[in-house]
Image 1 (spheres, each protein chain N blue to C red):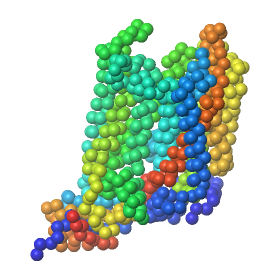
Image 2 (image 1 turned 180 degrees about the horizontal axis):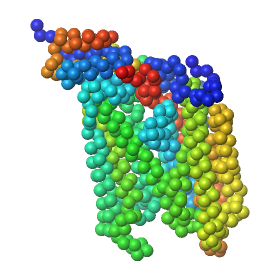
Image 3 (image 1 turned 120 degrees about the vertical axis):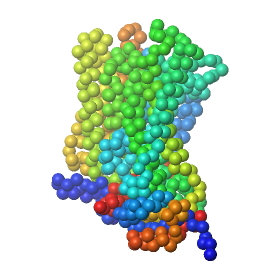
Image 4 (image 1 turned 180 degrees about the vertical axis):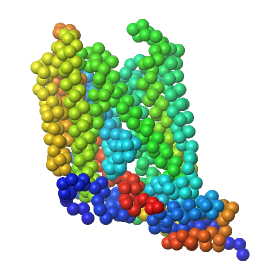
Length: 458
Length: 178
């Protein structure tokens, strides 16, 4: 049934679901990944590697808590190093999940159906990695509670609500909660399907409890659909607000290179750009390893490629605008920022960023590249590296040289910085593979609605 | 002879078209206490049994309002009443700076209200329900479509309703015990 990818003749787009599927086969194929007793060998290999990298993260964080943030490369003037770069990068990656599950739902883009579940999981796991950094960058996270959250503490101290940093706490924690709710509510009917196709009593009981007694009643579906659409409508402005608020962390300050009004749309476009790259990085191996070419078809990959190209062009426009406004302002500090980007000590980072985010992704104009999974995978890796470099350029290159040349400085990361950054990738991969093993990675009930026999005939 | 108490009569259909056809006819025949069970959301089915409107939107609106008011009052109380700190001569009640958190709290309140409101209106979690006693009901979450006319309906009569459902040629009609 699942052959290798065959490109249909010119002028015909690949289908969004392979031919010959029925309600039963859709259920069995997707639930089969979870309900089987045979865990594939590659799963153990990936989880073992990811878990050991997660162990490295734990080691580095333990040492950080013991010694303090002095083990990192941060200094004065560059007080925001890897922790903030990684925070912005990870939270941006999460955005594509919400775009797929909420915004494309409102626009009735039915092709989103087979990738929305794991894109939502990607969002939750990416936001978890992102949330780790603000906590540990305080160096003493057990104190961070009263720095970050407004609760009546014994010192009578409260957070400063005029600061974008506290807006960020509210934006990110709301984003995590709403993403989690959206994901959980989508899973309820699928847990019911798992309960009803489980072969052993224990498995049936576990999924039965998670399904909460869902029975597919039409009255329930009616309320469910209302709640689902409303959550999508709420998540849409929320996702735009989250990266806007993240960009306020920079834009509200007076540092040259940060103090610009176009940061919110620029950050949101960049977030979606890197998020779609991450969706491809996860989807391409997943469909190959589990033989899901009938559900995640070439059409999905092509569409993700197109969205990456579109958001990449917005990001390219923002880079040009950044340079243009720096020059057009005729402000000597802004001009110095521009020349620092182009010729300063970190200019190789800037040119690598231009190559990764603007030049190389132009290959996506070719249908051949958009229809060849391994090529898309490579472009996605390049884009995600580029987006990380973008955050590095914004954070480090602006802080290292501000108004006073006597306080200029340099920033170099240490091995602990790298261990924590790489460690979060291991943590993310580990969570993602555990999710694939335990929960349906594709929304079963929404896939049923895509079948031709799902429609009521007049 | 007193029959065993039944929850209702469950008819099983192979495709959504037959289900919607039967549900519409049952509604037209005056049955009100009934429910359709489908493996995916089927708008036509809920319309056919007369479930047009629900109160989820109202609950979400209330959740959003509570979140909004709660968020803004927290900021006002902290910044202007309990812990006023002069930052760069800005007023204590600097409302434009309070908008982002107010917005986030409104979305949070609305999101929580949507999920928990939906679950509460649906009466979930519910560990036991009689419809699960129908023999083939496991397929309601897979590939079959069910219509259950409940014995609570004033028009319900075991023989009469069975004959009525038989007219739509379902795959099977079963009595659902409590």
